[in-house]
Length: 126
Image (cartoon, rainbow, N blue to C red; front, side):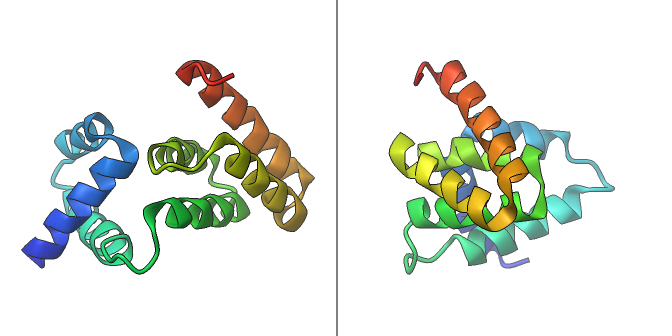
């Protein structure tokens, strides 16, 4: 493992998903899934999110569209919260969901709006 890239990944992961979530996930890791958590933190967050070429808010919007296209709505919800943490506005999030509905299908858009409204309510952003 590249320790520096892992630490960069851990910092970016916590900034996007929240330290409490990441700490809980890492604490729950066991001998079976710890290698995956470490590799994913180093590779996805350290390598993929660790440079300054694409701003975190842009990466968040890109991720929302890709995750929706894959139909991974539990991950989509996690990354929707991350997009808010990365400064994506409510209006931009609505526009992203419009693109998702156009390119991934209306049912995907409906699911995204459902999750978005839930999260906005939880955060007092309605």
